[in-house]
Image 1 (cartoon, helix red, strand yellow):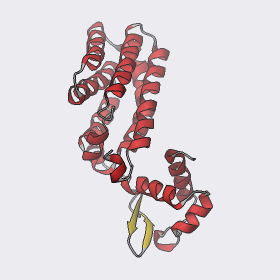
Image 2: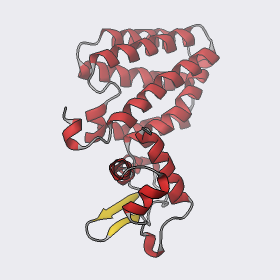
Image 3: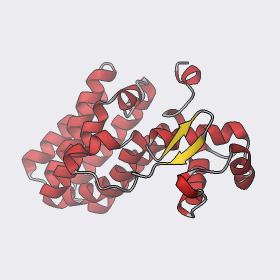
Length: 230
């Protein structure tokens, strides 16, 4: 069975290829499912993802429409109002490995001590809320250690989105102790690589960490309400 994230990617490609009719209306679900070679249920789950990302709207009795305002530029200080957990993690995957590499070169001894301490705090955190505070502090400390004001501005602006209901439900660990432990190990590896001034290792560790976060979000962010509550 095709993974949800793959179905969503294929659906995005169809939209980019111009499958919508005049007025931005998308083909009926039956045709879309046939074009993609998937079942109607899988298609609906993928459409839910695009709807929550703000790419489409669905109107009962009328159909599904591509949002006409989807390409409008958004001010950086308002980006949190126009994004979603999947978009946030895509951006973080692109930026934070680079940031980690810079931190390995530029971090001061004091900043390295802070990173090692925060990584340990995520490992020892008792409960999801304590972990999430330590996690946010750790990632911000990596950005600070890179000494790039623009990266910091983007990180802080995007970080605002983590306060919304959808992200609070997920978090980076989905309020799961086992996942919390796994991600804390990544934090330790990232901090250790930065302390060793190993830029390549730091970048790879950050990428591996955020890739797992992305997989978790893609698997769990847009489950139907009844499944998400389980």
